[in-house]
Image (cartoon, rainbow, N blue to C red; front, side, top):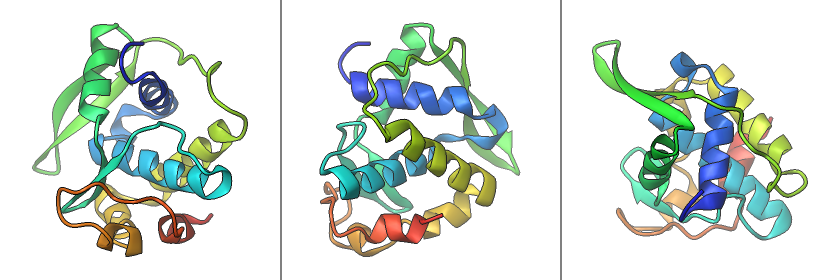
Length: 158
């Protein structure tokens, strides 16, 4: 994997674990956010190494569009815009098993917890409400959100 290898590996792993109809771009962003915040709280660093930018509907990983393009270019995933309740939704399919050999201990467990919580217990709309917290409020629209403080993960505790 090229430029964003930690992020690419995490995105590929999440896509490989989810059914396309359960994982759109919004839920992918939320899983990444909650997993990175939880890991940061426990270990002082993120899983992906990416930064998150404040957007209207919550934090968005800064480089996830490039990561998904690179994964598609490498033939690891495909994505497609589909109609979903009258709106456009990007769905993802993994074409190969994800390589998890580079993940640090505990990261897969945290990612799996967030996949379950986000995909099984929420819609894209309801999960977005959980990201409008103190961390999200601490940045201006379009700015990088500083991690720390833990409010985002506590909202997601399982």
